[in-house]
Image (cartoon, rainbow, N blue to C red):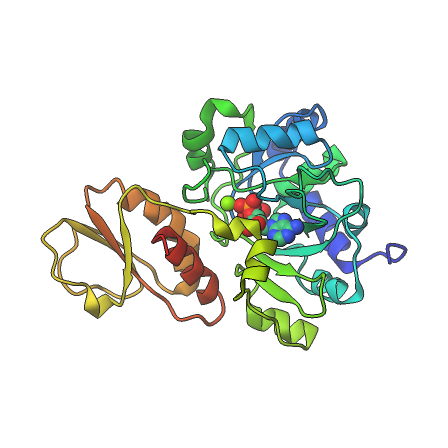
Length: 330
Ligand code: TXA
Ligand code: MG
């Protein structure tokens, strides 16, 4: 499987070659930190990640510690080549279809883990999630380290994920030695997580690669995690996520209730009534991209409640709706 020069690895190599000299020297410094067991925050195309050597249980422990994250919540291993992915998981033919179609990109694939992956990285599970991020600094950091990098979003556990370097610094500040600033992220919501270990593909977390896209590539129906059994398999979905410090309520633009409190609005359409602050998006993709920043901004607007428009579930809408519902505490 690794003998041919695969498309995903070639696309990653081209991306790495495009890195600016300034970011290259920052990533070189980052790679030294990763190799010595430290933490580095870095941009991906989805959100900023807080990375460490995925194969070093002590380095991984410091990720959990810095985030205040429950340690049974498994991490995604970020790779810069398909060969590196093969070092950590057993890739099957159907997974390879997805890899060829979507890497580098916002898709994490859950596969049987190889022994080299410490139980701490995979939350004690027999499986591990791998993804190749579509970001030059991220890919360069992994490549220069020569190691798969375990990385959750670079926020304090439970808070909205960071989509720019400034937010990482304000959340994590002095807990991490280096934040690589690659500007705003392109997708704004985290990667799609799909479980490819069983007979059926299961969508554990909707993200930048849609269910429809997965189904087209696999030529099969992708299942949703409706039952307890699958929730157990994706421990991360159990925890409170993205919580703004002000209550968030989902509703249609024309159905915002009469409010005696100061309220803020976020959505694509203009709301009925007069919010004290509002963030309007052109479309669902822009909404997804700006969601976490808007949450962080509106919670500081003086509003006592934030109303947010609930989108339809086509394409990126499923991921957007998922994050909104979690932020609303559903
Ligand atoms: O876009 C992203 O995926 C970002 C950037 C930094 O790459 N990372 C990210 O990581 O969102 P995190 O740790 O916030 O979310 C990882 C998700 C969790 O829902 C976790 O439960 C799931 O992936 N996951 C990881 N390993 C798994 C496994 N072996 N089986 C099932 N789910 C797994
Ligand atoms: Mg997260």
